[in-house]
Amino acid sequence: MGSHVSRAAVPFVLVFALGCSTQFDPQPCSLDGDCGSGLVCEVREQAPVCVHAEDAPLIIGQSAPVSGTNQALGTGMKLGIELAFKEKNEMGGVRGRQLVLEFRDDAYQPDLAEAAARSLVDVQPMQAAPRCPTTSTPAVAGQAPISTTALARGPNAVLAFLGNVGTPTMVRSAPVAIETGTIFFGAFTGAATILRDDKAAGCRPYIFNVRASYAQEARATTEYFKKKGVGDYKHFISFDQNDSFGQAGYDGLVDAYRNVLGMFPGSADPTNPIIRFRYVRNDDASVPAQAAAAESYLATMLGADSANHTVGVFMTDTYGAGAQFIEELRRWQFASDSQQTSLNKATRLKLYFSNVSFVGPNALSDRLVAAGTVTTPTGAMPLTEGVVVSQVVPNYQSDSSDVVTAYNRLIAASGAQPGFTSLEGYVAARVFIAGLEAHKGPFSPEAMIKTFESLPDLSLGLGASSGFSEANHQYSNSVWGTSIQPNGTFRNLYFWSSGQAIQFFE
Image 1 (cartoon, rainbow, N blue to C red):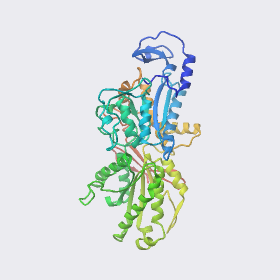
Image 2: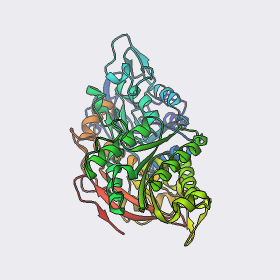
Image 3: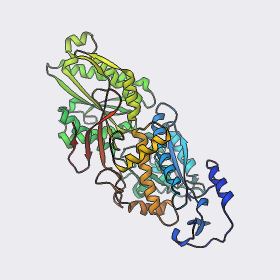
Image 4: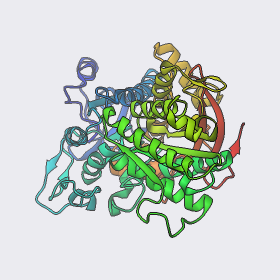
């Protein structure tokens, strides 16, 4: 169960427990309230008994990149979760239980993420057939199965996963979690695969999402592009990572186009009706070739007539690749070359870039600000111009909701730099902790499912439709559009929430 303390990763918990606990005769219980002061109800040797709270820490697992090309993403999510855990622990924990984060660096590599998941659940191979279809049938075609036999939680398994980062990593780690009957909560990805579709079948109850989906971000972005005058599918471009993450964003964009602007004509490519340019994960050196291909597409568009063209670029990317792609296209657009003479790119073409929230908004902003400006016919243009990020948490620089206020106080006290990714980690952890607080009996993944499903809107400022239910395992359905300013700050552009009309602030 999640309350074991034999892990080498948490020696301070062990020392505290061994140094302060006293001998007593365990008493049977059903709820924490059945136990005396300083005691909680936990399962020991398959029976619920009262134990000292300090002997029952809640150990939560996370796998994310804190090394490699995309380390800012994992570093941010981990920081946000740690802020929330520290805040709760300093208030006495969950009825005396301390929250402990057991972390693994997966470097945004799927094989390392799977290995981390197996380690965190202390996986035990079984002889029976798998309980979940995602175990033996890979979620992504061409990948090896997670296992051809069932997998069980070992004695040192974490209670749950919280805030795992990435889609290509998730499709290898989430199947391990749910096959072993472990909750997979608040992942930093808006993908539909496994997390929001039916691939997991009867194992779906173990999955809880906090953030809005990529499909919802794509819908909000498409409505924004429409307002800016992006008129048809030929004026949409997808720049996406060549894996399950990029595919998730692209699928969301295609569906959003149909819902907002109508069906594609018969002349459109039936597989990829919107033109797309794909870079290699963890390889920013693959971006220039994709930028050159996009420039060729835009040049052909401009060469076909004498009209002005407004183009929306939907970016399912990470910060390094995204910043490079934007800079390459802007410098091409305003270059003093032969195409400028023949096509008049600088005045006939308007480009709007919108990145999904996973990009690492603050790292993207930092890189674009550092890249400087480009010379245009009307003067210097910051490379942040026309660059938007669809956020799944409020703007920490201007929002006054309780959760953002608490986050800003904690991040300031920590001495770390604030950011959207760490705010998302903090929000996910706050929702998770609320479920822990609501649960009164021994902690186990099975028992926690019903508790989370009964968790109402916590009034965190994430939109009116927030909350879980038995039929709904996604807490928030809201998207905040923000534009990057020349000084690197973020300005609110729009607010979108499922079932409500988009609100523009510009």
